Length: 591
Image (cartoon, rainbow, N blue to C red; front, side):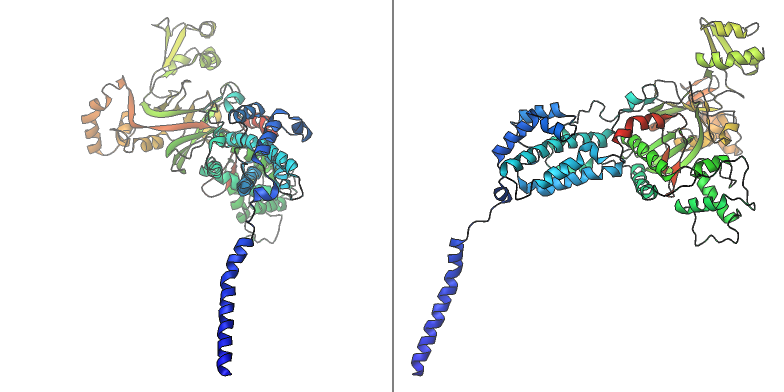
């Protein structure tokens, strides 16, 4: 009996094992293969290509959607060349990539640009709704084809905007902008459609300079507060100094706090109307980052700056982001930057400023300093000055009219038809009536170029130079020159340029221009080598000092930036170039 039970159990176990062993095979034979997303949603490449051709050929849908496709003719050409096969949507498996592209277009606001410039909302809605499983295949393929067209148009425009800006500055500022334009012929316009990894490409074309990225952060900061009420403080000629009371102090306090320039944990006062030293220290910082005299005295100019609203800051930032797309310094290891609105020369290495020198630039109307690029190759000690004809007519004639000895006192030589003529009897009327006169000012005290001028390649005869006229360096607005750039501390710049870059040194240079050097050993050494240093590079007392390595120099125009301390800086639009840029960029700017 028990033996029969054991046999039965063994048979049962064997049966169960056989069932378990065969079940997987049975289930594999009966299970239907899983459908791809293309099959589930009825994506048909042939149907899609036909709809893509229709979308490019019959564009009534563009008008219906009330959108603009700037590159429509280009799109027709490039799609026709590849028999209307897609660049992006070859399969619905690429959805995540397309979603990422759409997200990048939506982030155009981070660059101060309106995403709708790229038909962002239409693309997003059209593409997302194409995955509604209730759509018929015909409708789905049609929508996807339209999405493809809009996406490629958007990528072409976005790529161009990121690589070299929305506008062409050489057209916008035809007479004043001569900096190189990145890919001015837009030879890389079609680069987005030739990428194997479009997301890597879009990441790579983002502006990379530290200046740009810092300004983007400032944009986010001011966007967060741009809707705040910004009470306008009444302007008055009466100044507020430490210890004085003013009903404007509470408003100044609030603005300093919002701008992040005053810590409420530190600032304590018994009388909110009294201007004390703690508040004054914050005001000094505010004045400095606004290009004002940082004395802590609140005058009309400081109040005007306090009245600039966060919304105005946002607008200014967007304009300067566009300027930075025109010129990207990220791959320039060492350079000199003259920023016209800041009236400063900055020495930059590895995207960090080493030091600044005050500068004077051209006057606002007919003497504006142009924006340009050159290679600083040498400087000239004890320079002569060949006076431009325009300056002869505007200034020299008036000087001679008021003082007949004007030319003699200032060491001018006058030439006519290549021959030097006597200054005796030469009148203002003579100079004014003829273009045949050439005026050269000899080196020495009173020479308009001072003791040194710095030369760099450019077609306008512009250079950086010393000056005997020192007072303007104390001005807030230093647009006082005839177009060249005067610098307050030429010896500091010369010392930097000479470092490991010339046979000259700073002491030799000082001796050559008549400055005092006490060390007799240095003076004796200079006497020994002077002839060899000047050989082939001198004429009279004038000497050229050539640099072993040229240094890039940019003259540019920025009215906002973030400094090394992380503080947002704002400057006046001294040449009214912001106004021109705003008028032309506004349609592309974010809301």
